[in-house]
Image (tube, rainbow, N blue to C red; front, side, top):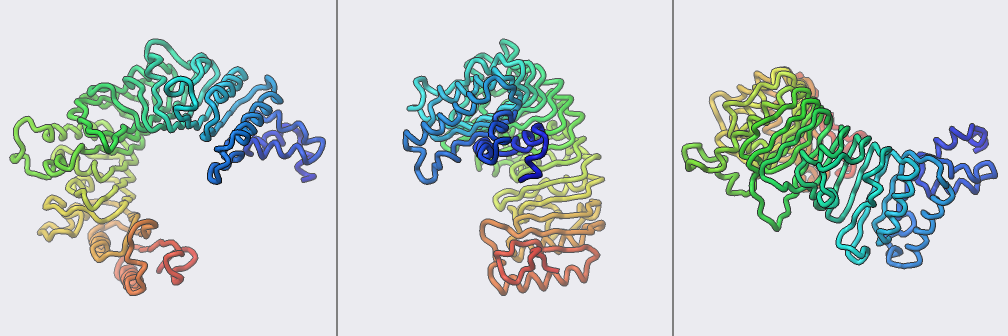
Length: 489
């Protein structure tokens, strides 16, 4: 501790800035030179669980909650009007909203640029229905990053009338994660933050079935639509993306009837989750087109190819199992992903692989294939990407794919999975490495000694008969026989 104590105050303050505020405050007891140093730290990280311990019920006691309020008030009072860069507040144990807003106003007045809030207020905590951030929030000319986690419905943006005026003129990052977000039209939301570069909205709800996301400077977008299990949702009519500077996209939504504009020429990485509204839609997607009635909405889902055309320059792409089902409607018009180096696929037993053959054929420079779960719904359109159905052109799409490394996640140790792994080893001509990760959660046959012995034997045979290096990576809690690194070779 003597060496640290001899460091300049600026360096010690920097060290303290990495500690939770409560821990930083405790250093005042070390010596006289540390007594007031923590008050000068420009970063505050306050978590009420360190005081209230909700897991043991202390958060229900008024005096304990008041001690937390007194601590935060004391910290802010001791710091006076000293500048503050970053303020992180987690407050989920029934502290009154007026206290929280008082603290937020304090740091806003001191020029905070990075603000993270994690709040949870019941209806009894506020005199009004819902919770509103203080008005000072929207007049800050210093705030650059704003992250909000809330167990409540976030609707204050919508009620404030986004799009009608410029808000937070310096804000570059807006990240909101809530049970439900009402923000109005996203296009209007983007207009309200003139220099916004990163936007994340988790569990938002469209106010219109025709939406357009438009921004010339947005670089990162993560957008997921709220789909409550107890409600019925209709597919959007149209979704457009006019985001020419976008580099990263994470998009989860019901598949739309049309994607009239997709302007993402600079996109580097994308994760797409296009969902079908009902299981009936899934069945109709798998049916031959001539079996669908004219005007069936499912026929319009083939317009998803417009979205794929708009993102065809990506180098990293991840697709969910639902997206694979949707893309089976546009296999004949699938674009070539000439820059794609990494393709990730999520697989589920209730969703098919109809689009996998064309995806593999249309990735001429693919190097890495990541598959989360090998088991999928077998259809006559699986093609030759798997070994589910015997066919004359077996392995054709794989032999034209230059992938060098395959990573398989969620391996259960079933016979069907081992058959598919062998299929990959035989038909991928450039494959050099395969990593197989055992499922950490859920059922796995590897817990049975006779199965694990058989898998080990097969892995050894694969390594002898193939030029590909095959590794089985497992958790050491499954069996004492696994090595510390969790490998069988």
